[in-house]
Length: 252
Image (tube, rainbow, N blue to C red):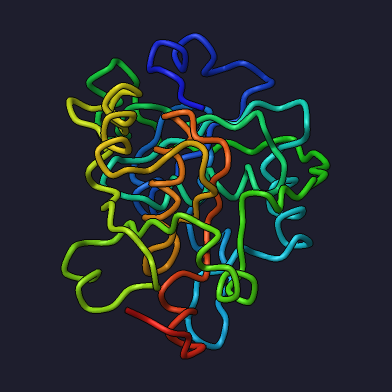
């Protein structure tokens, strides 16, 4: 799921690798590494009547990913920053639509110049491809199902302690996503650190896990932390707290 800076250097101009810079578009236009394209968070979410950030419709994702030159032959590498969980949400979106050859650069985009990458202003025009989604509904859960099966899951809240104390989903456990993000330029802590983090919080690999936060972005980061640590049965509740409260579902 993670690739190193050295891997990116070796594959930066590989025709079968699509590099996506997930920072806001204005930051991308200010300067980005050669052969990278822009893909920001607002392009892969849709809003409901509550303001929830839900997964985008399949038809729109087909058009979007195809225009980025992505098909089943392409390896996708996403670039972001540790404190911005939107890159994790975009990674999750690729996995949800069945693109398993999706990786995340385990380094902050702000450090790329330090690693020897030159920033360019010119944008890349990809050769359009045909993206064929294969939806993986095993990594997503919706409120209508979750509300009737709360006790079947280990529910993890990726928000801050202050938000959690203001109200949370029943039976949920607080694990702020910030506890597992990296330092010294890495996006995530090591697998060993994450193993210990979840062990200390009594999160078992035998359980079915649901991650949520406010909008689903921080929960996506926690989702990736769990996957790095070797957890298999993990779902994202992308509607998260905004949808849950909008539907007036029970809180603790």
